[in-house]
Length: 153
Image 1 (spheres, rainbow, N blue to C red):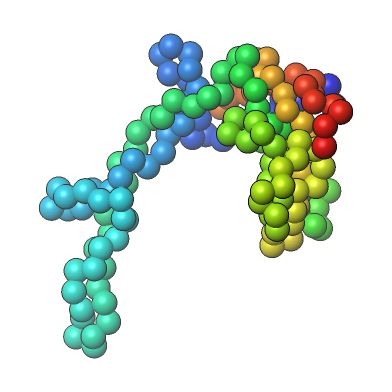
Image 2: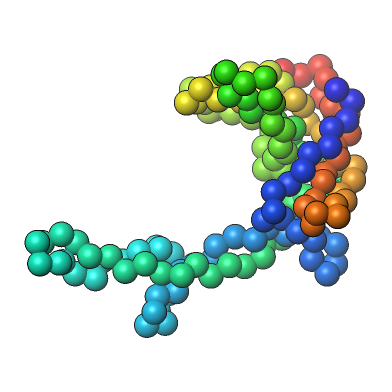
């Protein structure tokens, strides 16, 4: 495949400078104003001796990503065993190849990378991000160019 356009999920957006940012949980805030990286804390026990937990509200922040025109990304896909639908995504963190699920130290740019719980993962080569576009739905599409390492595994 020469180029591929994927759609990022609704947690991605463009900031005021045109950078792709990701909305993610920074920490959690409890009713008394304290914060933690845990979304629950043990408060005590009920009458039967069962633990009683208090839930916290997530606090969201936007984090800048490495999804930028000109950056490299590994094109990956996953597919359920009994499905003919292949879902594509990119990783700007795996530019040295995708690890296998049984041998994580063996990284490859192409081919099957393992199956977990009936879902197979495949690598489709290292690509350059060539276009980022905001769609009318508010979601982002990212286009990657042709494989940069066609001769490597």
